[in-house]
Length: 297
Ligand SMILES: [Zn+2]
Image: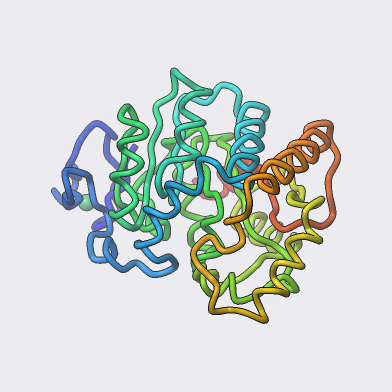
């Protein structure tokens, strides 16, 4: 069901306006806008990256391999999902994979920046898109699974996002997360990407438990390529003027293919149950905790 951001009442998802106070979301370019004041400049990302991203994602090893890993985790941990929300869906690259793998599911995408949504809508005409602030998610008990892929590190109030995500999930609902990790990898690339932090596993586990999640899977990835990543970041430190949105990802075709195969090999190990202690990113699957749900009622 929907939760009114004005008065807090809940009402059926099929209805546009709150039953209790009559408030309803604004509309931007025909889409529901739950945080219209932030749609142009919500912080945490630069909206002019979207066109660049949309081109980059299709071919780049990192986006391709991450997509396959996310799709595997969704199938393993939420095999029966009928509703899926992606927070910060950007250009819809991940969402289109989820939609392909779960053809009967209702797919929702949200983005704080209206600028990303036309790309996503073009990719995925059957999904429902909305403009939304992840710190105020206008749903209660609505989704079987929610994903936020390289989103949390852009938001200062990550605990608020996790707490709101938990409210929006159905009982036993599953949260899929990817984040950049290791503070020692922090570099100009993070600043350029508007990250507010790189996570440690301990920090993210603690925050998930504090907001009522049980962790089902937690592993590093981009582990085999960590030395290459570290080398790239060291090089950037020497020539920061060469940075672009995808500085680290714009690499020669041959290298792109090799890196993709290396990440596929690594994914094979993760699928077999190997958990890597170090890697450029972390994948987490967490489930809405029953314990907390009962306390809240
Ligand atoms: Zn209301």
